[in-house]
Length: 145
Image 1: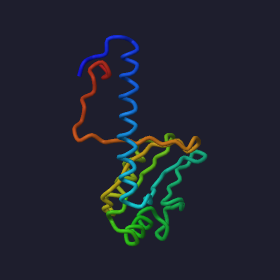
Image 2 (image 1 turned 60 degrees about the vertical axis):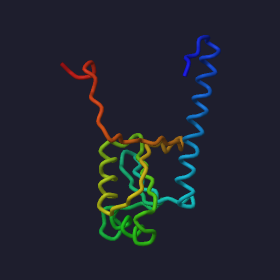
Image 3 (image 1 turned 30 degrees about the horizontal axis):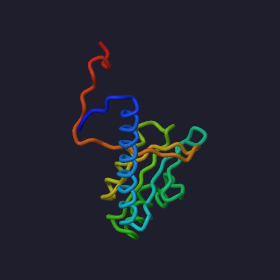
Image 4 (image 1 turned 135 degrees about the horizontal axis):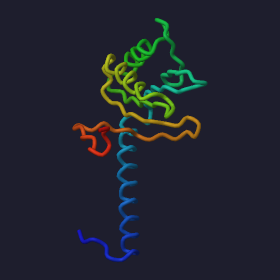
């Protein structure tokens, strides 16, 4: 592909790339939801007044045997099956270790299809977080001496 030469060509080139990216993301997200009738199991952790609040489909889960995170996930798996899609939503204010805690809980139940999002509950906006198959080395100028 030929590189654009003028500023207006570069601008049009960026707009076309942006629109293409939006279309691809829209169709990929749409196809994932269509496979599952738009319904997903939502597992979230939100920081409320400095405390972590875990939820499974809006239901607050606690550290009791009858209402724990694992108990609620097991119930959802029994009702919907392990192929049911799961959305993991972690509050931007939560420590990064919360991602690992929720992923571990889902691994214990063996849910197969999950997507991880980091969200701001105050603005009701979330962004998908992707794990790569291969690690990327930390640049030398980012490492301490």
